[in-house]
Length: 88
Figure 1 (cartoon, rainbow, N blue to C red):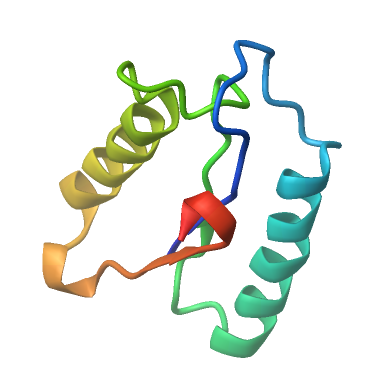
Figure 2 (cartoon, rainbow, N blue to C red):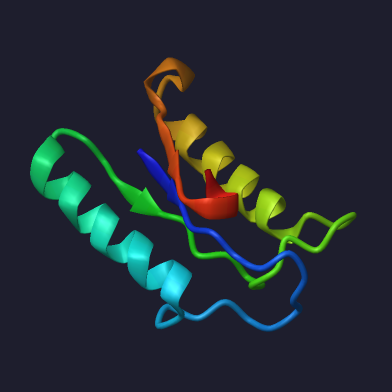
């Protein structure tokens, strides 16, 4: 399970763990881990930038990189994306 946080439409500021969008997803990630158990990997994506920043789509690139990393280890049909706001 890849957990994708929301973000801002435009921002070149670094994404930090303590920002509200990331904190919401940290709590959701923990809840999913407790609910799904140890047999299911749950990973929260940490974007490099706060903004989606069209046309660069920074958050999309970070999400795709995380997805590619997971696909190398797991069968693609076993990957689930969970998001909130612009992460969903």
